[in-house]
Image (tube, rainbow over all chains, first blue to last red):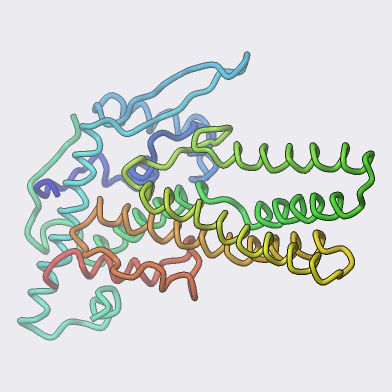
Length: 115
Length: 204
């Protein structure tokens, strides 16, 4: 596991969904991501472009027969950033847990942390 | 490059509830990818039907029935098997590190042995005792094994892939006995597990 680093780019809800989906995948079709996340073509294109500009996502355009096919995959940089982001989230939860040990936790925190 | 910051102390970054929700979202999306990689239940039923059709055709001893049924059933089985190969007409491919290759290398031949281990002795035993339609019954018994064991195997792979994905993502310890999941949970529904993995994320 790499060191923790909260990533504002990945933290944005739609981008988090895209990166999470791609993190478990070798690659995913543009249409698959669009359908699974319920995004419009333009919304997905915009988010993928942002991630691509950051070097987090690789976009590949190819042809299946005569039909164009666009697929996306998480780059090494993107995967590292995602792992660091996940580690940062876990640290936040862990620290909150330590705080909770020191003082009584409220009911909401208890239910989220399952403690 | 993205705007990456060092992990902030609790209170200055997103709240723990928000972090837990974000981790839950991550796992939910990973489950979606894994679910897309698993074969649907109808796959096992169609395979089973093709196996029974071969048995019934062989019992008929009719050359026309054999000439039509056996190639058709074999083609059906071949198409179904090819369709399960990652990357073949799939819209997403599970990451190589998540695929339980070693377990698949053992489990798939194991399933074939199990089906044949039921099909062949049953057919041979019934034929020896003069039972009518021994091959149909024997093949149906093998097909029944496939319909029972196939979805269990599917669920086992789903659970293994989830464990692998979780291990890649977190420091959570590996699920020691993933076969326990065969009995009671769908790989696509692990929201409860996820709460656990969020907890395992640190020394909370």
